[in-house]
Every structure is written in C-alpha cells, then in structure tokens.
Image (cartoon, rainbow, N blue to C red; front, side, top):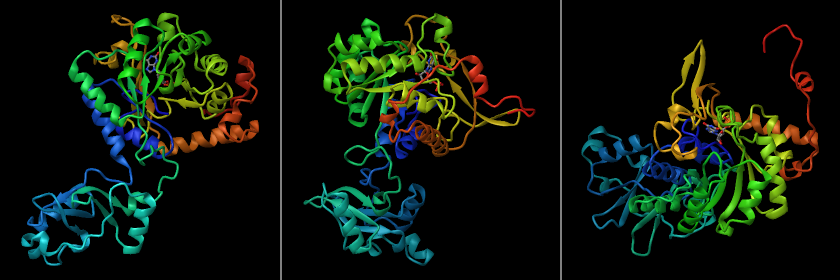
Amino acid sequence: MSSAMDTVTEENMAISMALHGGLGVLHRNCSYERQLEMCRIVKRARSFVIDDVATINPNAKVSKAKFMMENYNISGIVVTNDEKKVCGIFTKRDIPFFEQDIKNGAIKDYMTKDVISIKPGASREDALKILYESRKEKLPIIDENGFLKGLITKKDLAPEFPLASKDEEGHLLCGMALSPKFPESSQAKEILKEIDNYVDIFFIDVADFYKKDDIEGTIKLMKFLESDFVLGNIGTYQAAEYLMTKVDFVEERFIGLKVGMGSGSICTTSQQTGVGAPTLFATAQVADAIQDYNPKLSLIADGGFKNPGDLPKAFAAGADLIMSGHFFAGTDESPGFIDTIAGRKVKVYRGMGSKEARTSGYISDRYVEGSKMLTEGVSNYVPYVGDVLGVLATLKEGLANGMIYAGAECIKEMKKASLGIVSVVGQRETAPHDLIGKF
Ligand code: XMP
C-alpha cells in the first residue's frame, strides 16, 4: 500500500497501485471537496463500464466530433438526439475523406445508424460475446426506453491488468485517509456521504489512535458511513487489546489495524516526544493481540521500510500487508515535480507532521492538537526512481526470494518463519563491507 501522504498518494498513485494489485490510500491534507474529486477519478479510472460517455447531437458538424476525439483521446462518440435517446454511433472510421466534408458535413449523414448495443446489468462475458460476434470495438449500454446508460469498450474488457485490485463492479479499489473528527457542518457531512459512495476503505489517520476523542469520533463516523474502516496507528499489544475488546466499533466494518509509530523515514515523533513504536516491534506486538482476540482483522505494517528485504521480515513478524511512503515518493506517479540536485534527479518527500505539511491546517489533528511549535516530521528529497511498476517489481522479487529462502509458499505462511535478533556486528557483516569502491 502507498501511504496517505501529500507527496505520495493522490489519484495517479492510487490508480497505478490498484492496477498492479496494491492499494493507494489517498491523503487527507486537503478539503473534503478535493478528496471527493480524487476518489471519483480513481473509481472511474478503469472499469469495463464507462459512466461518463461522450455524446454528440446528430446535427452537429463532423469537425466537432473530430475535435472531441482528438482532445478526449477517444475513438468513437455515441450520437444522441434532443430527447437524449441514442440514434447512432460515430467513430474514427466514419470521418469523411475530404476536408470540406469534415468541415461542413453533419454527423447524421456519416454515423452508423444501426447501433449494436447491450442492456444495463449485462455481464462481462455477455459483452465480450457481442463484441466478438459483431467485430465492433464499442458497445453502448441502452435501456428499454432508448436512453444511454454507459459504454463498454473492447479495450477495457481485455485483462490487461490481471492482478488489478477491483471491487465487484470492476472498478479499482480506493482507500482514503480520514480524520477521526466527526464533521460539524451539514455541508461537510453531505460531501463525506458522497465520498463514501466511492471509497472502499477509510483509514483513520492519526499518529496515535488511543485518545478518547478520536475513538468516540471514529465510532460516530463508522455509524454514519458504510465503507470499511482500518484504524491506526497503534504500537502495542495493550492498545490493540483495548480497541478489540473495550470499544464498541461497528464490528463487521472494522477490518484492520495499522501499526508503527515514529519509524517512518521522515518521522521525528519519537525524537521529539519520546513516544514511538518501531514498525517491526509494533507488528509483532499487535499480531499477538490479533491472534488472541480477533484473527479476522488484517494487520498493516506502516513505515520504516528501506529495502525489499524488509518485507519478508514484516510478514514473518505477523503483518498481512505493508504500507510505505518512502518506496513510492520518488516515482512518476507521486505528486510534485522532478528536480535536480547535484546532478541527481529527485522528488520532494515530506512527513505529514513537518512544518511544510502542517501549515495547510487540514492535517493538524493528526498529531497532538494545539501543538504548533513542535514538528513531528521533516521535509526532504528522495531519488527519482521511475514508475511504480518498476518499484513494485523489485519489491516483489525481494519478497518472493525471501519467501523461497524461508520455505513459504504464500504470505500467510511467512508468519511461521523464525525471526532472530541480529547484533550490530552482525548487521555490519550482512551488508557489503571491506571493499575499496563506494556503494
Ligand atoms: P516511510 O518510512 O515509508 O514511512 O517514510 C511512512 C509512514 O510514516 C508515517 N508518517 C509520519 N510519522 N511524522 C511521523 O512521526 C510524520 O511527519 C509522518 N508523516 C507520515 C505514516 O504512517 C506513513 O505511512
């Protein structure tokens, strides 16, 4: 999973992570309006049904259709009349040959009138069959009254991303960070309700999920919203035990705990406050509590990952999933621009408790509220590393090889692997050493 941070996960990252079988958790250092915009884009990104279909009137000029195709990067437009009923389809192949006809010709004279369509609610298999039999690329979804309800394209049906994380309707899965504070204004409540329609999993996002107000706010949010919830971060057996046994969360939608405090690469919480729970320690602690009280919960080890070899360790300690900001902040898909420092390509990566991130005001309740002087994170640069797919491929290989060495066939089996404590001398030995060159 990619972290809910404003230099890591916005819509591009969330789409890419989900397409490759992961999950991006959209950050919350912005307004509810912006969060709504982001999750809408993720949910509409890739599904075999396109909801926002481009349409054109039969009396419009061919030049308009050509302009739309070029600008929206699409190869066909559904033609709907003044009543909004489907009366044809106009594709790139229908564009007339002569420039004069493109300029002045009307869509109705060039469109295909006999539209091959499908009824709402049809399955992927039905759509594939019709597309194959008709040798068409596009299939409008038309209801019994002739109204357009969506569009299916051959391209979107092809399993180009066989590992994509999808919901039951074929839309990409979308996670989002949420403040535990229940919104006060009715407008905010309304937007949050709408966000709920797009988001699959909300991640309550605070540095230490153990405060009375945060827990009470979360209970209210869980009752108000319908999506699933992951709660965090916590770092000890006792905290997990308390949340699982003493608090009345909506049980069926409390699906996971996220752990690790102050161990992220941009975190200074432990240094600044003396409070923290390094990710491996927190994972081991909370894994025990989950086993004792609610084995159905998923455990997410969050932050502190430096190398692919850290993944097998987190799973061996009991994690079901891992979350990182550091691995993904330097990719093409993270927000922000590529900069150059001393000849190296870099991107900005900042902690959500850094001065730069906190001045926005939205995220102030992630940390101790009212604390303005004390930052709990830093802002810096990470190397530019290309696209997310490349990073995931490296992580996957490190994890798979670690699993082979440990004799595990799946991540669950990694939980049986033994862990040992390596001394400082041992650590030095397990990294390259006593060589002349720099590495
Ligand atoms: P990595 O190691 O991937 O860690 O950089 C990312 C995780 O760190 C948490 N986070 C913070 N923790 N101060 C903190 O103490 C911060 O400013 C901060 N910002 C993010 C968060 O859990 C993230 O997933």
